[in-house]
Image (cartoon, rainbow, N blue to C red; front, side, top):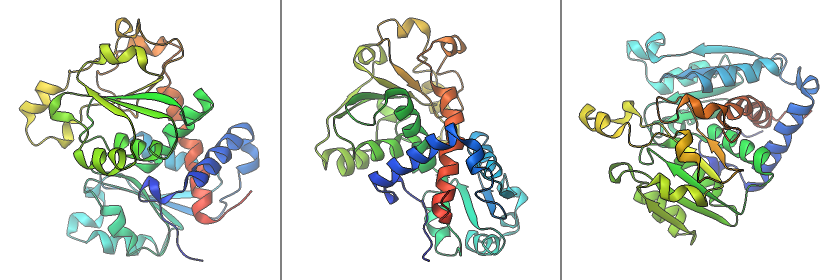
Length: 307
């Protein structure tokens, strides 16, 4: 059987994403049915960049499937600190594990790693490029909250230049019908031209760009907030100047729709105040829970396991 990887969200067809969502929803309803699905299987989590939710979500997912986990949470605790190439690290680990989840600060690293692996590779985030399993998490959350993945207006707010979660989700939603995109950011952090040209313009998809969250708010069905990422900036002065551009608080939500769905891939710094957590429209903690279930579904799919 050929090895199936997940490097980019478009590696999955729309039908496959629908199937993964259906499996995740069945896992939520019938967890005991899946508790031994990956018995005697091992997941390696190779995180060359810090992570809390993604790494622990993968580990929790594999353990809930009856499998086991090995790996490292920072590059300095691996032999790359001694000068070993990522290719050699991946080749080695693929001798021990059945599937690998990999995060790396360099764009394209998981794709390159897949050339050396004897087992499936899951991209758990590569620099400012892609984060397909967060996108699956977002899609599951949207589906559970809205009952559909089409015909809505979604606003992306904050760091749209370096935000890999944003890039992946735009790619995924571009294949759905009736989606309108609103991009809310300072000029310095606008959506990259290659996304607008190769994804949106190429497919004739409607979008608008604005610097005002307040003006965009009334039209939104979904608001996807993002953190201005200090680790992506070359100049700390630019980060300090831009980091507090958008702060979502209860006052800004006054003109919003009553069924608005507020998402955030987390971690947050101060772009959503804690007081918003009590608003029933805040769905980001549900996102965290959903991440485990969709990753369980994905692990089974890539391992060819059916329950």
